[in-house]
Amino acid sequence: FGDGGDIPVYHYTADDVVATSGQLDAAGNRVEAVLLPPGVDSTQGEVAITLSPSLAAALIDSIQLNNEQDSSSLCAYAVADRLLPNAALLNLAQRLPTADLDADQVAESDAVVLSSINQLEQLVLEDGGWSWCSGSQSDPWLTGYALFALAQARELGYEVRASVLENAANYLVAQLVTPSTQFEAFSVNRQAFFLYVLARLDADVLTDLDRLVEENRALLDPYGRALVASAYAELGVTDNRVERLLTDLNDSAVVSATGTHWEDAIRDWRNLNSDVRGTAVIVKTLAELDPQSPLLPGAVRWLMSARDTQLWSTSHETAWTLFALTEWMAASGELDANYDYSLEVNLQPVTDGSFTTSTVTNSRNLSIPVSDLLPEDANFFNFGRGAGDGRLYYTMHLESSIDMNFVEAINRGVSVERVYYDAECDPETETCQPITEIEAGERVRVVLTIIAENDLVYAMVEDPIPAGTEAIDPGLDINSPNQGGEVNRVDEDYRYGYWGWWFFNQIQYQDEQVVFLANFLPAGTYQYSYYLQASIPGEYQVRPTFARQTFFPEVNGRSAGMVFSITE
Image (cartoon, rainbow, N blue to C red; front, side):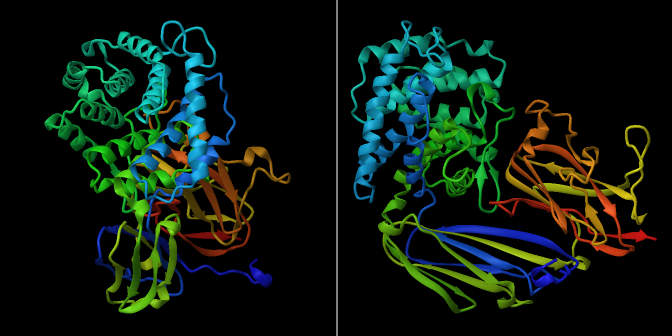
């Protein structure tokens, strides 16, 4: 029941979301046209608009929060994870002296960097490497990471023992192998990382880079190619070798209307890579080598949306993302915001104001109801930016409901199919046929097939149920546990092992629908199943299943609607 005991009646409509984004780098205007789809329900929906002076300024608070997290001073990786983002903040303070950075936070970062250098110097082993948490055997990847963090500190002017840097570099050189002997992506990506770290220390690895690209370019994941491009840049190379790698990054980007990210061909667990960490590495490379890349705003927006509140899912993702985004802020100059902004819709003023260095972390969120828009003509949204420093970013999401007579199933990055079966039919022992009716008192088995073309972050699947039924929640004491649903990965490409069900971390059984949530859903094909109890006879229109990314809802898909009957 709704508020006051009312019975809610839902329109037979389909959810729909489309989006766009843009930016203004100088004084001027940009106009976006919005044409409402045929059959739109004017009583529902909105155009959600966000105006921002900075995509990443909010991360500065994340650095302080990261410093407050528990970490062991005996684990070299944890020390490096703390050193890297704090060094990045200090680098930002040096490069943007006019930025309104908190003096206490800068002082805190300085103290963290000093203590981290000391801890890594104490943890180094006799062979020049570092181990996992006070172990006796050096780990090549961890040694590269710790050395990279120390190199970053040294470039900022901090004193690092020369013998520590030299011995660690020698250890890393000993880990380099002949490219022709490498046949797996993780190994080639690791070699790219080693060469990048050595290039940061002014080692002459140009020949090694050329051989790696010539013989193993096809095996390099996008983040590995970014590391190679950055290594070339460290050595002063600016020719087509770098351009070709940047073109590869452009071609491999996964782009939606408001977000951009990159994925490994096969998840590179052994180098602790993920979509977040890999995208962060690429953002850093592009910010350094191609700061005007049109991919960067979407990638920064995607990284900021991939946080769990203010941090990312692991300390390593947090370290690399903070490191990359501070590089982006330095390259973009967006912390120096100082301009007026305005928005008109169909020549009518909606909002105006100004962004300054003191408000650079603030965004302006607006909602224009669909009922305020012209139903059959184009609606013009005029974004204005005055003179001054900084950038104005905007995103627009048209979220509407459309009469089912005007829509079909749709795939905008996610394919969705819904089928009903009689629960008495056991798919393990017989072939079950889809049904469109069932007797009252019987149960229905619902099967949803979801195909994610790319990895999804914070995915949501909403499946409305017929009004005369009730979703069976196996968590309630009155229901048998064997009436619970299942989540299966049904494609043959087990890119992430056989643990697909781990990704579906929450299922909500609501009065009018069942909602499935996944913080991270790798690309693949999945089947959700659950049960309905048919109770009230009648003929019911069932709204489509709708799947989307929460923070990038333009990546979505919906099933067809249906009519389902419950007989006496």
